[in-house]
Image 1 (tube, rainbow, N blue to C red):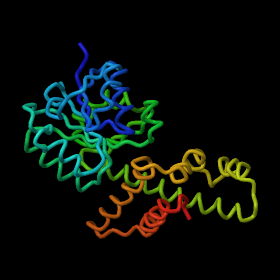
Image 2: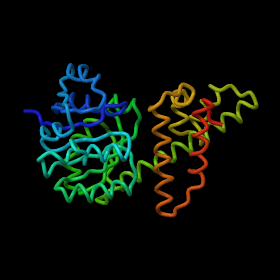
Image 3: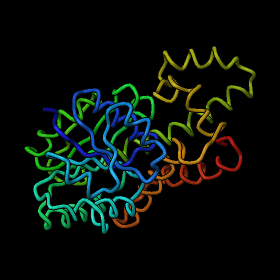
Image 4: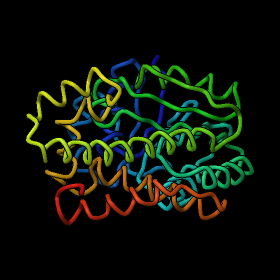
Length: 279
């Protein structure tokens, strides 16, 4: 009999992740506020629920949550029909959203007082990684609990990292990664603008970058990355990057930590919404 696992949040990332868990032999019980996708999920064998409480009640050992922000995550766990309203003490709540270290630490204290376990497990790899089950997954929490969840992670990704038992450490790793990504986006754009000023052929220059010291993931995926702002759509990758930068700035304000390039990048990306370009 297949292990039953809960999944909350079926957006751009969560939907393919839930499908990959189902393909790997788990019986997924899912919930999303957008129930128009339920029929498609049922065709793939996923059981769709009317509430988060129902998802938790059916789950054997764990429920995954990958919703947009802190407020939604708190609702998933502590809401009137949230996970904590189910009589399932001992259940592992796996937070795969990107929040921030302080938020995860506070959530963990509340969750553990209620008899649940929290696992900190944000992801990197964008929609394409979620669809191909090649996500990078950063984890933190009690080692034995995280290890028990590794089979779920292996169904959704192929690079899994453990950052110790301090909850929030995986969030710090994810935010640091996305800080570097965002700065690299701005740096690559500026370098290309300089190259274009001298009429360098774009394809040839990108080929040069890909085999030289200017190379990066952004360079290697430039044609896809530039669409994030040229063909901007709400609630897609550019919004996620911006949200993560906001979380970094907010975390730095709490800890009195300075990241000058992070702050500048944050403001440059804000302008990208209106202009359709980074400049």
